Length: 156
Figure: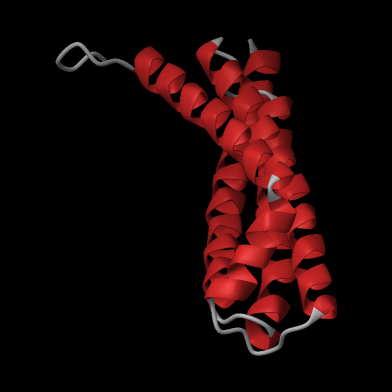
């Protein structure tokens, strides 16, 4: 549906560009991980400090980066499928499932870091957990739509 020169295709393309930009920014942050951890420790009051905490934050950052890359990759492929008109297909459901699990694991990783090291990680964990729930609901809706489409295809 076209409204004022803006349509679904342009929205999907814009979102794909934003996802691609997020991948580039994530790559930059991953490369700069050690410096970001040092900056965090130098400029913020943490519940605990020391080399073990620095190492834990670096490992947390790299684990979350891996989840972010996997999530963004699946989101990008999801958007490509939508752009190609492949909406109610099993691959869409699988991509949403993977995105949901990435958010879930990010929440699981960030919660303890927020409790023991730096409180704002708790907010990241809550946001990631909430996103996991939202994406899971979307995944369930898409899954049901795929089943209904398959039944309809076999009926005709």
